[in-house]
Length: 73
Image (cartoon, rainbow, N blue to C red; front, side, top):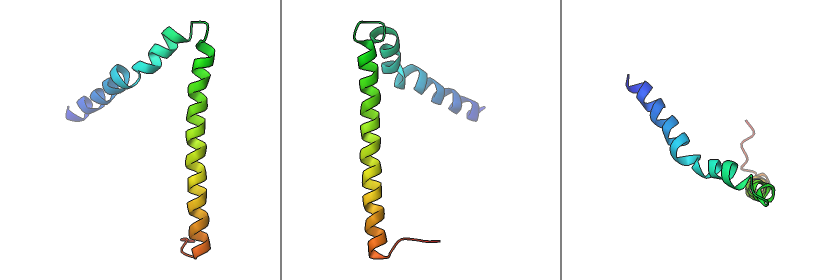
């Protein structure tokens, strides 16, 4: 009973709160004149964040490889 309620709360959190900006974007902004540009700008921002994090990860990986402390198990 408790586990079922926890999953319902998690589902409610995502559908009622965390996805509201995306629903607004899908239903309100996407149908306007600049909707396509707005939607794609958000996608490009996500991509830029991903690329920055990947570059940081590769820089740290190269640092560990250079120091010889990389775990090669």
